[in-house]
Image (cartoon, rainbow, N blue to C red; front, side, top):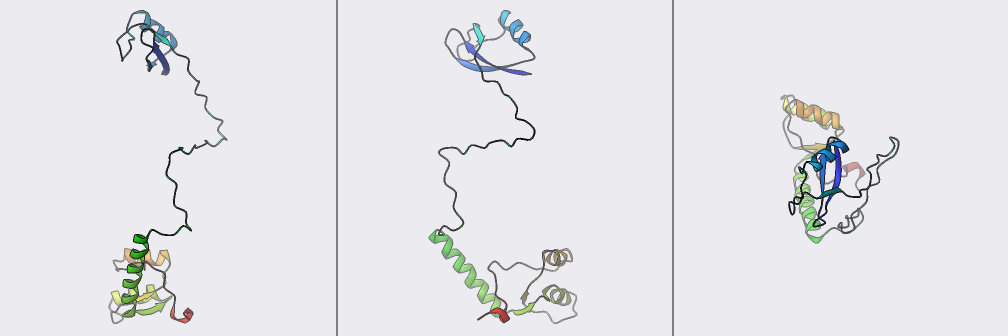
Length: 158
């Protein structure tokens, strides 16, 4: 299929049409089968159009940024006051929850598993686990959740 830019000779309206070939357009046009969608005129001609030349396979496309696109927030820009207040509230809730929890450090996955299977007295714990360890706990049906605000281990706190 070929896309042609077409122009109405009566009203100057521009539109596009899809044809199997240039000869197909010529045949349909000569039979009066191509008409302007704006005014219905059958006096249609191919308009001047820019060719669509594909780029080489080793070239990356150039993405133009729209002129009126909103500026994106920078990582080091200050947070809006609402976001800062929300983060403070989350940090306060997490700090309160950690007060009644025990730091188990690198043994988090082992201790959570032992509590789940009744090998250890259940209780609230927090510590460190790799992504694979956390995934394994979830796959075993053990409820775990990441802490939203980073926690400094007791031995590293001032």
